[in-house]
Image (cartoon, rainbow, N blue to C red):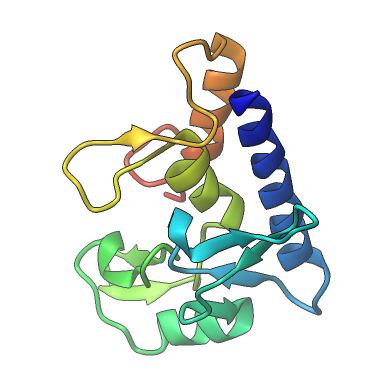
Length: 151
């Protein structure tokens, strides 16, 4: 029963992400993703509770690249919205290069650090998790299998 509830919440969260990607004229990015920033309505819909770091893609792209100097990719990040550094010119380029699904997979569905030096289990992690779902969650969190999901 508990697993079924967690899966139901995960599916509702994916529905929200789909809306953020497709309902508006451009994608809406969640740049500060934490479990406590979401709530669930009586109808089972996931709602964003903390809107301090929610932005349209065009705004993020301008903000993250506008004459921002960098030494590493992390210098171009805006919370969970990842940027990219041109390591030759030392300038942030390309705006936001990850998406909400990657962040939610990494920080909520698969595992989350919560600012701690260790990971807590995510919404879809379980000792009974089959290898296929574990692999899918890992790929969703970090599609390129390197230190940063977008490089």
